[in-house]
Image (tube, rainbow over all chains, first blue to last red; front, side, top):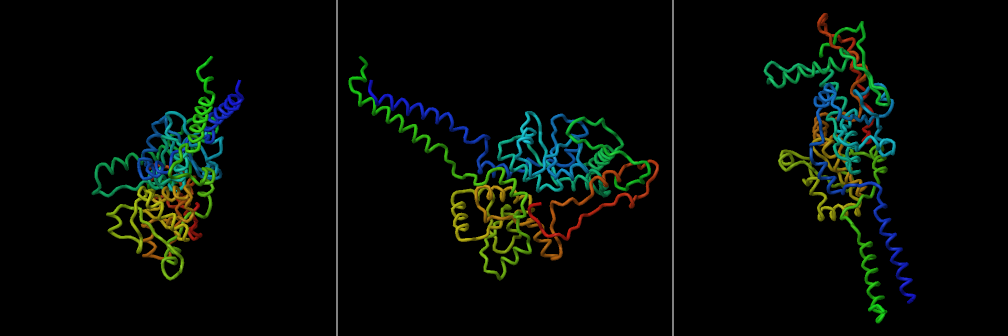
Amino acid sequence: MNKNYLVLAILMILLAVGLLLVPERQNYQQIEPEKLMWDITQTSRFVTVDQVAQMIIEGDPTLELIDIRPVADFETFSLTNAINIPLDSLMKPDYQDYLGIEDMNVVFYGNSDINADQAWVIAKRMGYNSIYVMQGGLNCWIRKIIQPVEPDESASQEEFDLYQFRKGACAFFTGTKVEAPDAGKTGIKVVKRKKGTAVAGGC
Amino acid sequence: MHVHELNPKKTVITMIIFVVVIIAGLLTIRSPRLKYALTPEQTVLLTASDDGGISPEKLELLLTGSTEKVEVIDIRNHYEFARGHIPGARNISAVELLENDNIKWLRILQEEGFTVVIYGKDQLQANGPWMVFRQIGFSNVTVLLGGYQYYLAYKDNKTQKYAPCKADFNYAEVAKASVADGEDNNQPAKKTTIVRRKKKGGAVAGGC
């Protein structure tokens, strides 16, 4: 036997092993910067607070709300069934499991939409799909759902319908209906109506 | 007796070519035009840092008088740009900015020590593009806090502060207090709907 054959055979085996290892340099499927930029310029990732409210009220099983504020803020107040993933922990393996669940629509929210959008950009880069950002964040949630403003008399029928919806949603979220809390780490917050409290003008 | 054993060299040459092809393939494997310079973990840190943007006050200082080299890029559409923009800004959309020529231009700016400020109509519009540029290694790219909207507001009233990521309300309090039961009582309950605005006097922090 030619010694060359042996050397070449070993080389080929080494290369084969090398080829096997190549895809493992990246342990997650990132999308390319160009694709990421293109997705960023699309506004289809935004959902309004009204849409989120509607999904919560209807009990949409595909909705997965992710609160990206710090833990302390989350514990004081959060949306129904939201999961807390503080923005700085987004890449921790424990939390990665919450993203990319099949058939789930992940909606990020924070105080405003900037931080939620940053979480979205990172998750998008990681290749996750069906992820959204709640437009305006919790500030907008309070302004529109918890403290809706009655439209002018000259406003269109749609605006009045929306106002009616928001009033109903407000009643839903501020305690006229108390839901059975889910056990577990979802951290459901049911804000119960206090007896003595006077009436709010807005809702 | 196999055919190749008649000419051992031929086999060796074939195998060497084979090996060379594989090695060449490995070396040229998928080298994308743009690569991420920051890992996702580093990007997370970036969003948490204070290094997240430039306030209109600071931009004004840079644009007027100082010797700092600044390039301002407006990523809104041409129509919005034509209606008004920050003096000296160039109008290049976010997607166009990733084209080869612009990337080359940005590299030159980076080498020459320019600060590149990008802005959209609000901060949200420029937030993503800014993050992309940071992630592909343009550490000199920054975002105008509040976008053009806030820039205009700032021009009108220089005392305003921009704090986009602060909570405007004490959420728990507001959600509790604004319980709706208009049936028995219709007084506007100013006492209970305390809207606690957070202090807005703080420094403009980009990181949020």
